[in-house]
Amino acid sequence: MEMSELVTLLSHEALELIDEVGPIASSDDALKAVTRMRAVGHSPDLTSAVVTQARLRTRAQAKFGPFAARMLFTQAGLEQATRMPVAARHARRFVAAGIESVADLGCGIGADSLAFAGAGLRVLAVDADAVTAGITAHNLAPFGDMAEVRNSFAEDVALEGIDAAWLDPARRTKGHSETKRVTAADYSPHLDWVFGLADQLPIGVKLGPAHDRDALPADAETQWVSVDGDVVELVVWTGRLARPGVRRAALVVRGDQAHELTAPADAPDEEPRELGAFLHEPDGAVIRARLVGEVARSLQAGPVADGIAYLTSDAALTTPFVSSFRVREVFPADVKTLAKALRGLDIGTLEIKKRGMDIDPAVFRKKLNLKGSQSAALILTRAGTKRVAILADRV
Image (tube, rainbow, N blue to C red; front, side, top):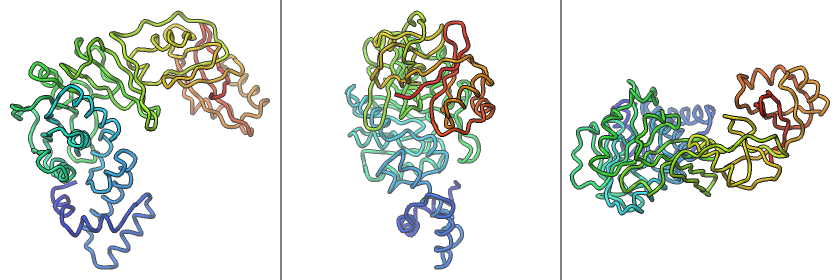
């Protein structure tokens, strides 16, 4: 988005038109909206800006719920923004630590700043991009003096009077539609500066969940977060934002429920055991936090093989930290053998999962050429020292 488009969007006319256009969920909806607006004489630029925002607002409902109805977005900003339920948890962490004011350094479109202000914190929202800062100012306007927005590099902001900072470092390429997360060495602000800030005040740092663990501060709390099965972020908490005795945490959010597993360090794995009646797949946040062993011990389960994050037991398990499968049969991981067996079982719809095997599930599925009427799950992995295909049903 260019500054000229933002100026257009911030006009009273454009904001009213976005509301009037309503939800746009498809290209067909967008075409109809463009046709209607052009028919009554609206300019191409205004029409394009309004329809684009209406479509982004529709998409944003999944992340922002009712907040989306008055917000403005860039495509990249929406893609990178923290989901509102997760941002609310960030905010509660600051409140619980006795923080009263927070600097959101690299605020993007203001998702976390919204949550901070909504929790009663005074917010200084900072972004190096002028258009993004302008959008954030609009999004935070309902909070009045509780939220200030500045167009500045994070490194240039004076933090006197600020109790803590929140950072979502990234490097943005030219053009808002091209924004993307990059490798650790390319983050902006540079991560050396980011973690150096922890010497001045407590900070929370949002990183990609696959960030190099060896590059994380040893004395910080590291929390991996998953939402409805997708690992969405790694947060590094320092100072009084870090919980005593916690260095590893897996927060699992499913719908409106959240469950957390914590430990003082990476959890040692249990010894492998023979495949039992059930196979359990730990949530991605548990795997990233290296707390699979903790889950295994709490559930009296064990891994199917060394280095494989599938657990097995003879009892069904009810826990938010794993997805469970009831084992039907075990086959050699051979396409011809499997295809014959699955056709005999009238399997047509197959969920394929894999760990510890260099197999492309899409290619493997095509080779099976199944056309039956039944459904099942197929887990390709190692059990002990053997490569196996486990036919199972989700519990």
